[in-house]
Structure formats: C-alpha cells, structure tokens
Image 1: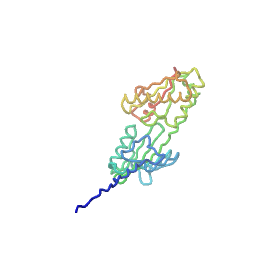
Image 2: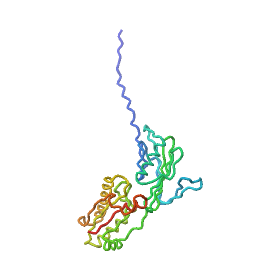
Image 3: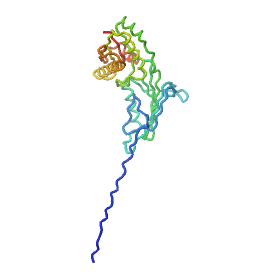
Length: 275
C-alpha cells in the first residue's frame, strides 16, 4: 500500500532586522574631535558655565588644573558588531587631532589610555580630558572652553579704524578647520552689518588669513571659504552684495611670529579693507 504524503507550506522564518542604534537625541560631536568609527553617543550633557579639574604633567592628586567655562561631556559607546580599537589607538587619534590644529598634550597616562589635551588661541583655551574603558568598548570626553567670549568691536570703532588706516583686523571665530562662524562671533558680524547700513557709500573687502598650520594650498582655500562665509552672513543681514568683496590669503600675510601660539592666534584673522 502506498502512502500519500502531503507537502505543507511552512512560512519562512524571517529574522527581524537588528535595531539601529542612534546617538542620544540632541547630542552632537564636539567641533575639535571626529568620533572613532563604530561608536555612538550614549550620554551627552552641556552647561554654559561649569568647572573641571584636569590632570597635567607633574600634578599631584589634589593639585590638578582647574578650568572654568562652557562644559561638554560626551560618552561614546561601541555599537554592537563594530570593530573594537585599542585604548591606545583611541588616545593617539585624539592626540593627533589636537596637534594638527596647533594644540598640545598636557598629560598622558603611563599606559597611554588617558590624556589631557589643550588648544590655546590667544585668550581662548579649550581643554579636553579623554579616558577610555573596557579595552575599548567606550570612551569619555570632557571638554571645557575657557575664555571664548571676546569683547566685540563696535561699529563706530571699526569706522574710525577704516577711515584712519584703511583696514581693521577682527578675531572672528570659526569651527575648527571649517568656515562655519561660531555663535560667539555673531555679535561681531552684527556690528559689521550695522556699520555698513549706517554708511551706505562704504564698500568693503572681507579678507581671510590663517597661521602656517597645515599646507599653503589648504590654508588658502580655508581662508577664502571663511571670508566668503562672513560676506554671505552680511548679505543675509541685508547688506547689498555689490558693496562686498571677499578673498583668502591663507598664510601668506602673517602679522606675527608663527613660532608661538600667541603669534599664530594673531595671524588667524579676518580683515575688513576699505575699497
């Protein structure tokens, strides 16, 4: 006797797609540092004014460097399935990043798994403490920006300088290696716009300059982009485009010694030149 067999249609088992992990809502990387590949922001906190104690070379347990200012805390966590770097690799990447923009290492642990970094530009200082965990499933960045607020130059003072010297140098801040104007410089841009609106016959060339960090060609392109960004911001505030020109000179026209941080800070500038 033959047996009849029935083939039953069994639905294929489809595995649910893995949940895509995302950064904590509202969080963002700090402008100074690009995150390590495969990491997400697990925790994030900012405060307009706070303080932090940073390890520096030769500091004892109760003798750390106290820095006050705008504070940002970032906790990065390795995403599931991502390649895990070594703790030393994470630290060295951040050290290279800070040195590339003229910063320095203030302290590094003997094992190379933690470090204090600093970027100083004129009176502005940015301090960062990096510590790594779990070899390395996570790492934390604590960043304090000290002395970022500069006294803006009034439109009347700018006009006096333009009439007397034909130009004026301004300390307008940008994101590191970018042409994005920082929020602490918007008031200065507003003053430039007020100057132009109050003097309708005045025409200006917005000229960007850098220090000698990086390549000459890269610095020229960056300074040109920054000058264009200031020009665009002024046009957005109602200044007529034909009254403005923009140009970047890169590192070609230093006004101070690039061998010192103070000199490099003076060379990173935007000049308004009367046409």
